[in-house]
Length: 429
Image (cartoon, rainbow, N blue to C red; front, top):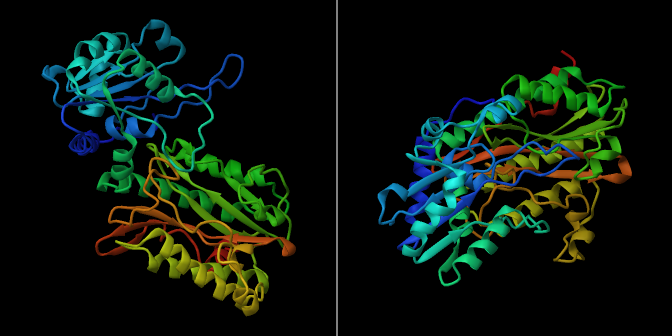
């Protein structure tokens, strides 16, 4: 791991909050993610299951967490199972948790090797009435691969068919949306690394550079500061490419007179930043580019005012749509007649701003949270309006990460350059 050890109190608190939501006499099991093959003899870089990490702090493959707060044997109320290291693994793969290190990271005192899981589970499972199992219920995910959780569910139902099986995901959806102070600090660190990468590329960018050269500058700063890497595949979209919402080829030359749309963020200790910026390749916006930029910036600032404790998702996005409609009329991209005659299911503004304005942020970039749950103190949300004009070869998006508190919003990216003039000043400094 590149990041310092996180205080175990975070994971102990998370487990206590989870346990409070269980039915009486329940057992819950969480598995690490699969290791996915990349080629004939390589795997993709391992990424831990976010729910397992949230509850244990263990950032290692082939890990199982078992929670059974009412277990008649106190030894097995919290149990962690790890892949046992050996001399061969030490030589070829390096660091793996020892039992003592896992105890220190997680706060769990009962730690066993993975080979003991089946016997320990079988010795206690018959005393439980309910078994909570985990799946990926993020509504942005489309299930296509029979990943470890799915295979484990099938196995458990085959072995213990008369138990009452429950879903862990609804509890995790409720808990993970509200960030603790430690989680906020980890997100701030990811944002700070992202800020430094952005300032680095403001000073680097000029006509003739390739998008991938800019990407290289970003990852250099991320790794230099102890980030795990990119929170998601970065978007370095110059000119017309900015109108492709998920563009990530990043292989074109940045040309004089164009604007580059950036969407990138650092991952730090499994927590993520998510930032969008748009800058002129040559260091100066044209008047039209600046007008569009300032329209997006206006919607962003007004959107941040709309989110708070109790804000309802759909109402918020309708209000954002009204803000954007006003700006698009001023830019002469749509008319008042377009608005009068619009299809309510696809309002006129959607021609130039077709995606949502916010999502939850945390261990997942699109973090696990209830789409129909009002916003609450402790939520971290992106605010990311954009205007995309294919006929002008121009796309501009701006995005910051906002923490909701009882006393108002805190912009976790307030120190990242955003004003058009500030961008120009840094690029020409």
